[in-house]
Amino acid sequence: MTAKTATAAQTTSASGLVSVIAIAALGLGVIFVAGHVQAAALHDAAHDVRHATGFPCH
Image (cartoon, rainbow, N blue to C red; front, side, top):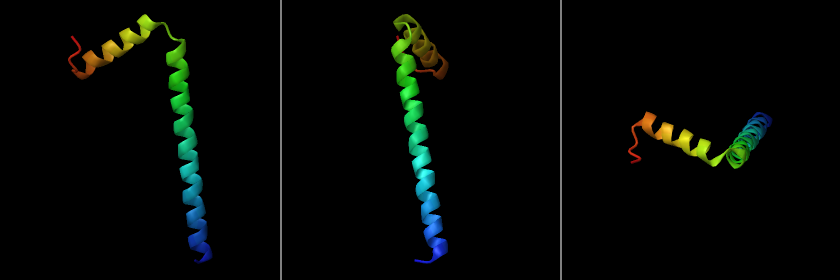
């Protein structure tokens, strides 16, 4: 393995780690927000999204 290949592998590994951390933070944020919102507001938001995308919900 050359030095250039090793550096490319390290960059790819670091990039993957940043992606995993960003996705985990986003997921925890969604869980945190959903856990603290009023149930009716969460239902209404999901209901509106279903209608906006054409998903039959009734």
